[in-house]
Image 1 (cartoon, helix red, strand yellow):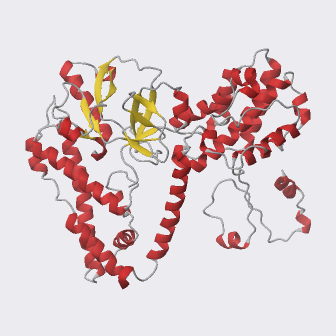
Image 2 (cartoon, one colour):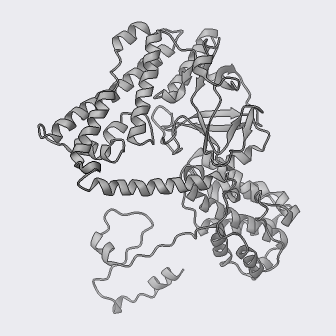
Image 3 (spheres, one colour):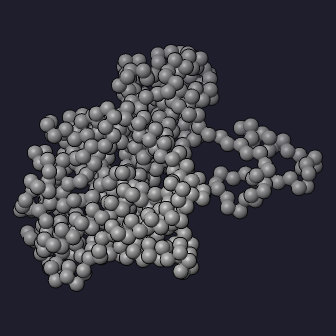
Length: 531
């Protein structure tokens, strides 16, 4: 490349003794800040947009390369498929979590390796080894960077769209998306490919990536929220708030308001009496653990609010933690001191606090009831994985089954509109739950299957579900295994218990479409939204 050529031409005899060249592909904390500020910075980023990305890819190709293939027509079609795939996987990052759970930095070298392998296999074998090409591309060349298991399935599904027998047989009649704008053109030279690429839309719609048009709204909202968040941080550095109040007055009033509405801690001794540890009822352990977790959170909130109000009046020392609590309250963010002890959430402070109050009210009603409720608000449970494990244990112990042989079947209760009022009795086996939302698609209660999202409807509530443990169950391969997360960020880390901090479980939903359609659309379920 040009950068390497410049480095090779450097002559030590003609250079200053103070000259230093630092080449790194990773962030370095030890890099001198003064050098960074005074030096010239160069970045090499992928082009933005499908068209620009395809043009860059074809700028590296020549007609001679096409002549090296023994099956030039097949090679051209599949090469364009790889180039389009390369552009799609890079440009999906702009859609945030619905594009990729974790954004990955794919490089032109990944495409170059796929091109070389494509040439090799097409020349060597009579029949095109599509499975081999898909495996090498999705699992090794590109997939080697992918760490999330849902992203691995996504990248495999995307590549299978472009590297398949239909693309070669149908040629221009095989469309990459529903609009029909994108396909492998039946042309001969690189220049003709470039001419076709230039005719593509400058700003592609989400359907080009297999996503719903609502994703444009999601991107715009996220960008606006980032802008407003930055403005809020700038305001917090100022000296006053609205109505001429000082920042200290605003923070003190906010703290006082939160103190007044803060729920009381759960009486754990009473919980122990009402819900003793019993072999046949694992939910007793679940409710006590949940109450203990919320007690720890409420204690931290209460003590930090009291100390902050004292510190702001000069009665005690304002520590770094208390100062951070005040700054976060001023810009409507959840203080880190609280979020560490609280449930995973992306909500601003105002919505987050109301959510905590609602969660505590749910468990207070459970405690007042004195036994397991007929249905559960799954969004209010701190550690939902433990809840589902408890439901599974109850079934296994009731019928003497091995818990390892059990798995949940999920049935939607489409006739139930208000589960809290209509579900008066618990099921004989399993549990009723409600409070799950969907993004990227919606649940059609009439047809009892997945359906396309309605325009401008970003999130919809899923029908209440009946989780019933079944022994030696065989999932229907035609069902869409919809990942369910706690929050919209989707990505999470693996705990020592083997559970994810965000992913909860898969929901098996009926569909009359190809499963790959919903995978590319990023359809997922969530226990909580941003507001």
